[in-house]
Image (cartoon, rainbow, N blue to C red; front, side, top):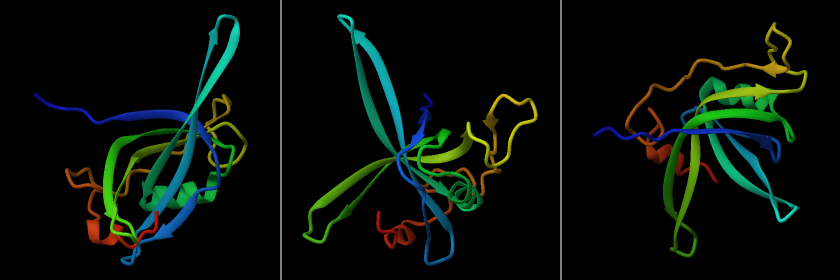
Length: 149
């Protein structure tokens, strides 16, 4: 039986993108995306916000850093990835994040805009990383150790 690891999110950035480069020069951008759920509980409006850490690689990462900003809406499609490391005290730490395969910029008037005028900035650069069974495409885990996030 095959398995599926796919995440689709539409939300707003909680802060400006953080752009870095690995020692080998690969671009990596971290996005903090908020999704908000609202519901009514006995007539009282309730709201819950979830925060998602999104990692974007390559040319797509560079475009995210260039065109996205705090408050901007984005559509993210990717996969869940959990990684672990030892902190300075030797404690094992874990982080689950979304490794983006597609990022589309929504709303606003910056970036590449679709001609149909629906307000959707549909800028999806081709993925610069090949699909792979490894953790982050062609990037090895030793290059990830140098990224402080």
